[in-house]
Length: 88
Length: 287
Image 1 (tube, rainbow over the protein chains, first blue to last red):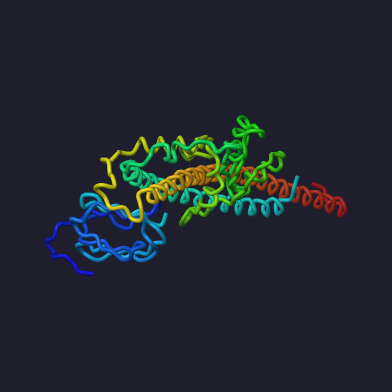
Image 2 (cartoon, chains in turn yellow, cyan; image 1 turned 60 degrees about the vertical axis):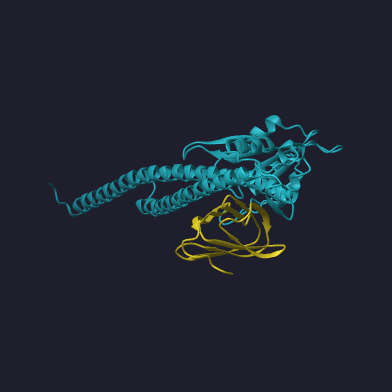
């Protein structure tokens, strides 16, 4: 996984389960897995909807990486806005 | 009149009952605060998910909110969400009474959640097709078995208890599919997303199905949360009434205790006076 430079444009990320907020705020990358395999979302990524497979999600924030485990989920990416609906 | 020592013993027991109801009261109050927070989070989650769902273009007749009944089976089901155990005041009884006003056994199936509701239906001789324990609401609500049971029906009417305030809980009736539609209308619609401008993995239809199932689950989970909130408030009220009654009883017992004490000392004094009189008359002493 390669990290973008510090001044790279940022993603706006919301990661939630029905009763828990994992993260909300700016981030540089989001890493998750779907049936095809692991993938990274960076700023400028094409609009993208995908069902997630169980595993770890990593959100690289300006301060520290946020890591959490999911059993299922959906990721949506639109205009650098990433929404992760997980553990539903 | 009872003995002061017996009254004292009973008043100690009432004090213990009063203290216990106080503990139950504060547990119920904490539970109310916790569940209220979850209801807020769940509603926000639904709003965000809906904003994405409503922007992907799928055939409207295939959407969950526009489902048609399947031929050859009862198309209506009542889902009753009651408490898992007693100590929840009279709210479950009110819930069953409300449901019975609209119930027709020839056209409607009943699915009940919660042992308390199932027991009440059995006692009244009302058959139900499925029973589920109320899913755990402390960490994660798994309503998938319930969703599976209600999916064949085109009309799903949920009877549940709604929290209005600590003092007021109401019985609510919702049509789950219509409610889903209403919840969606409250959410903001995003711009249209199509397969031409967006990558869907594995496919748009599979993602839409997953989103619909999640929203159905959320809508049902929210009614369960609302019910558990109302039940906690009802329990809080029942405990507050019990605590007040214990206090009143204790005051009565204290009054009775003091009366018994005074009566016992009066009696002892009388006995002393009588025996003194007798002694004096035996020894021939005159006043």
